[in-house]
Image 1 (cartoon, rainbow, N blue to C red):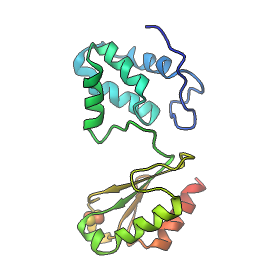
Image 2 (image 1 turned 180 degrees about the vertical axis):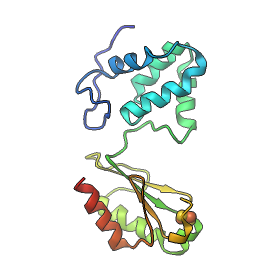
Image 3 (image 1 turned 90 degrees about the vertical axis):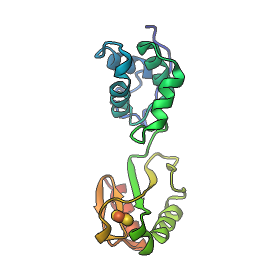
Image 4 (image 1 turned 60 degrees about the vertical axis):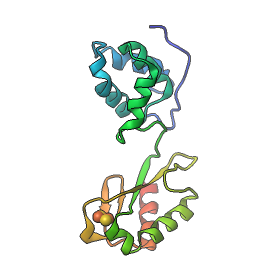
Length: 172
Ligand code: FES
């Protein structure tokens, strides 16, 4: 398969390949698969793991490799929440919006984080340091309100503590 000159954003990519083109790296991944249609999800998972999201050129390469319409590959990539079509920040902050957390002030905490980061829920800062997301319920309602930062759970959150978390993550 011919390699294009599309280079990836080395600020976001987690593949550790510097300026190697997305297609070169994707071709390396595809070489470990047989090209069967039922491999679509494992291939997408591998690409997501490598880049941290599903770059558009990668989706096209996958479609060609598996003999599937691009619309099918994009459809699966957008259907499952495990897949992301845009790069996420180095730090992913999730605010629980479930009932218990809502009752105990999660909207206030979310607003605090939105103001501090200058983005809304569902967005990533321009420097790709932070992504701010909401979740329905993290299953730790006794600790409400809950914020999850890079998979670490923080309970009984306040706006001030949320600011401390951002500060701590910035120094990682
Ligand atoms: S409602 Fe937030 S953890 Fe359950």
